[in-house]
Image (tube, rainbow, N blue to C red; front, side, top):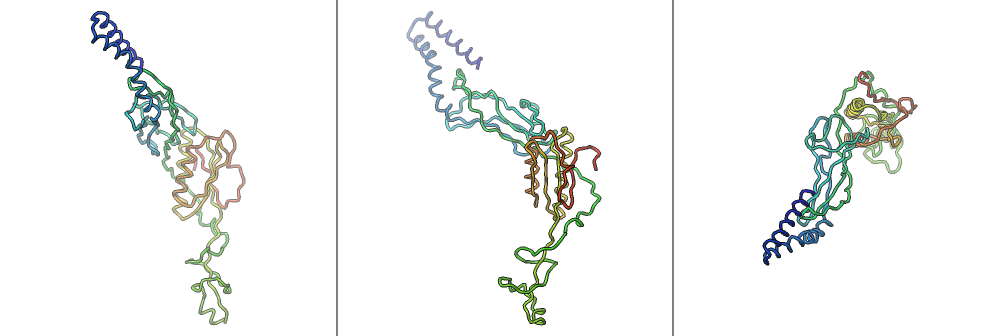
Length: 308
């Protein structure tokens, strides 16, 4: 903006000298135009200044090591006035903050949520002579997702699951059944007709399902960048491994906002839990490893490099 002002004042000085030396009507017209030009530019810019929207933009999710770019974009239904600002980045897991540099791009060496805000955001009139402080738009978050890290498991998880059996809601197919007397409202296709004919009473084959014990993954959200990468990589792999065996589980994480709990029954729920934790603040104290739970099986996700 300083360069544009210097350029304008140079033109204005030239117009004054032209008027003093030439002294004709043309020089007066040129001088008048140069004098009123800033006010005219400001007047024409006011509607656009009121309607312009400026916001940071970038990818929603990236993988670790994947290149990413950010932009400061403006939109307006009138001719776009010039604007200027910088992007400020902050890692949610560590609180580290830095200004975005286009030549370096978005740093994705470590997983985590990156909160993106603006600073020193200004908009100008069409000539760039007047500057106004713009309202800062809402922040956006780019999530850098972890790379799964395999965990060697020595236990057969299936033996922790079926503690008892219970009637399957809605009935349907099941390899396990329980015989009982017919009750009003039971589906007719569940009646065991041969056994009913022998006993003289209506007998129902009720589908049963296992009452599964709780499978629990716990996590303390703190550590160095490398430790957090390993924790999230192991958490993601363990979650995928359990889901691959058709097992539901629960994630409990100790964060800066307290204990967060996520029931996981599918891949979408797993990613939602991981993305939420990637954007959470770390905890300064506490250890879920030492807390007693009623889980049938529990695995505590650590970040040590040699942890099995």
